[in-house]
Amino acid sequence: MEFIGRIFVPILITFLFGVFFATTIFPSFVFAYFLFFLGVIFGLLYFIRRSWRFIFIGIICVAMGLGIFRFTSWHTQPNDPLLLSRIESNVRVHGTIVREPDVREEKTHITILLESIEMGNGTTSVYGKALAIVPTYPMYVYGEHILIDGKISIPRAFGGDDGRVFNYPEYLHAKGVAYQFVYPDITKEDKGGGNDVLRILLEVKHTFTSHIEQVLPEPQSALAEGLLLGGGHSLGDEWTARFRDVGIIHIIVLSGYNMTIVAEWLAVLFLFLGFYPSIVMASIGIVLFTLMTGAGATVVRAAIMALLVLLARLTGRTYDVSRALLFAGVIMVAIDPGILLYDPSFQLSFLAALGLLHVAPLIKPYFSKLRRSPVLEEVVVSTLATQALVLPLLIYQTGMLSLVALFANILVLPLIPLSMLFVFLGSLGGFVSEALSFGLMLPAQMTLSFMLVVAEYGAKLPFAKITLPPISGAAVLFLYFLIAFCLYRKHKKIKRDASAPPYQAP
Image (tube, rainbow, N blue to C red; front, side, top):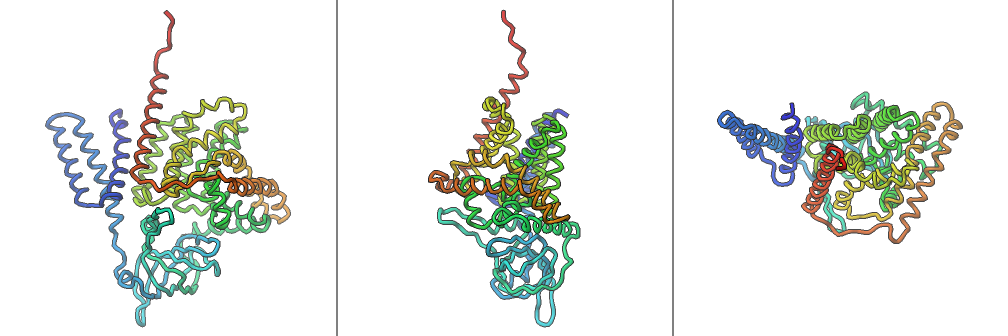
């Protein structure tokens, strides 16, 4: 069992490295088969030399080969030949909306499962998913069957003025999307498609949203929806930019980064019940949060990360839960290999969870003077721990460094659980009467208004943010290797000091 425990983590890491290798260098079935062959060779060498090192090397070769094989098989899945032959041409295709429409300020993104294409006097079956960019109105709902009439194209990468290029095609590929329509003509046919359970969950979510909008004015209602349900785009471009400039965008964009923060703060909110009940209540809150947001793949991944962090707090076995976190990450990557490098939500949630597990315990002793105020201590430690691991990736992706992020988070984060609680209670009260809903949401309106003030005036500060030049992916990887090495050395020293015999005076 000890041997299995020692090779468990290297196997998982090697699998991820195999996916990373195939993603960044080249996907190859031949190279994967070669690694499988090497694994067999080293396995046979064990019977000749009787050394467990050969077994270990063989297993590592197979694990890396599996990572390369999985990404290659995912990346080389063929697209529909009939649709490919019509790229950059007008088509009439039938499909079903298979994700909740992403409603933004001036447009809506809808994901469609393509089912058939009109050819002459009949239709021919096709397969694949497409993203359609459409006007905000009319509104669309999950499960609608629609007819799309417009030019079908392949998504293209795009870059900003700072030279950074966003690999949009692979980002959509990680979501299973291969085609794109830009403002096509759409005819609604009927409803009732998709998954029945998900449709019910989304209907519940929309009911909550309508109750919020009936009681709270803009932009408080949009912020409340962002906090409770993850509707970050509903705030609009101007307010979203302000939240990004002061480093609190994570509270309204359901990226997974905020999910771990929410988990920590729900535990603090219910701490008056006792340590273990607070963890249980926080876990229930995360599950309810996931269900209310529609239980999409992105939210589920973030919820798993957050629940594992809570498990670490509950058991006090950070190392074992770290293994579970790594195992959960590998399972997610095995199901959808594209998320490893192309899904910012997965990356941020994984790094934020690692920060709370491994960085927070190391820096907490340095803030012992704040222990008279546990809430302040928790927000400072949690913010610094998560920022320490997500900041290099955020700088690589956006190039923006917020100099007021720590102070803004100290002001805002303690209010998030309270705001979510009263928004949730107020939404429930909306099922009874609008007056009850208004009364229950009144505390939330005050806290939401304060958050907006922090974002507005924080963004106006001349030193609120600085823009950094693009950095290479290799530099980011080196930085994370350096962080991992320092954390490993620090934890190893703590473990060694804890196991050392107490000093006895001569």
